[in-house]
Length: 273
Image (cartoon, rainbow, N blue to C red):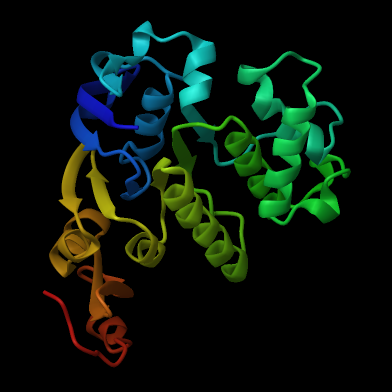
């Protein structure tokens, strides 16, 4: 699915959060959206998902204005995974994932729905907890269940808001591998918010850096994750190294800190300007 974002503006009361965002995301592309807290990342994703309405601008899904698409059809096109989701009632992992089939079936669900949900649960290694109460799971387990529910929708695009935030290192890599494989196998477009710049570099085709509601930089990890961009946007001095075409970011200190703190710099390898 191609996603076109045209001159998007959004404000919370008198606070302008998005200021004229123009962004084109190609079919099957994996794009990471990065930037400091308050830069507009989650707001942008919610505008695309149509959870909130922008003050101005529009979002096109395969050339169609999203405002002209029914909520049920939006759910067939876009799978959205928030940072967290709490249930106020008891529900099993299996039934939580089954909820993702609602755009395609009745409340009861068919055998085909059951088979598809079972396959997704197996793919995300959730079989051992499939009959457990969602509310009793760890934050990391809940996040994987939410992603499974989103995949059950069979969407053309996945919108992920910090999908690795509650996961340990091993499960972060496992989940990113799964997302990458699914995008390739099913041709799914993926847009995900990431705080880990190294994950963004390793797993995504393109990096979009937001700062104060605008797109500060857009391109490959090599083009976006530069010392100058990181200093300007995050206020951090960093060592940037390149290995096998991937960029590695090692924070050194906050910009303008004392000489004593600067002595903590790591040994530098080949640097990218």
